[in-house]
Image 1: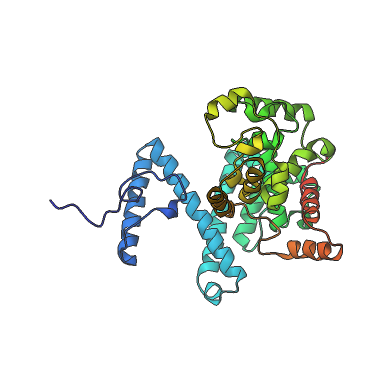
Image 2: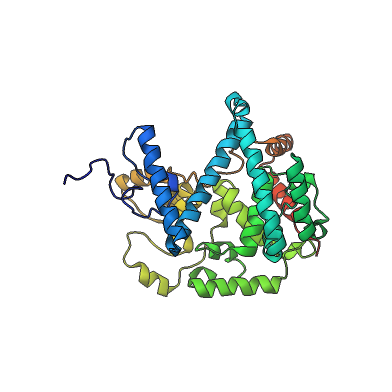
Length: 362
């Protein structure tokens, strides 16, 4: 039997390889749209059947794929709506959104009744409760059922529309709070380096435990405790959303321990501080890192040319918030900064204000 030439190489949907990145980035063959849709639907159906049969891996991958597709669909609808796409407003997309809202509230009403503690926990973490808009009578009725079982409004008396409007600054503030209170990743040591001794060189379990201990000593993240928790929030905001120059200033210039240097092996570079080995590409500071290396090492003309070439490849996954397409909130800050000849400090200050307003009083 001849091998099917239409099956793509490693990494395709058909080959069964588990690509860990964005689901829509699978490499596929140049099929006609109709053939491609049939193949995708077939793969989805097979994965769903495996999930229903109790395969834990299939359940996890199916949920991950649906979540990713949901994000993609949300972004598409948001872009088309904001762009004034007439085909969007004249199609069934609005009706479909209302159906989704109707079904979602119904599901949440059931969960609120039978899993009220879980719903309360997740709704509180979203920081923008309540999120129900009464566009249809059925949604209004169901949202009342949810509120009846989860009286979250009492915990969020300080909220109002102005403070929780989902503009760019609100999303940045919500992410910063979520990161500081819930998340640790391989770069957490950079954020806490000025506050926890040797946290940069700790292994994951030890580092996470040290960060948790530090957070417990600082107290809860509230407005009453704002002065203690603000410095870490400021570092997270700058390293994620600030200009590359400001991000570089946040990178610790601490000496590398001998134990770490021994693991690095022989190097053409003079490795002295953390800045010499920092994840520059991840944080979008390749240019600053290249200039730093050139100042502290002797390179040949060819090596200098190579450094200048790759140092200009900044990571676009973390754009400075000053450079993204501005919404009303960003336009207002830009106007204020222009009048007083300000810059990143104006943006950072407003984001920190949003963070503080989102926090409970005590």
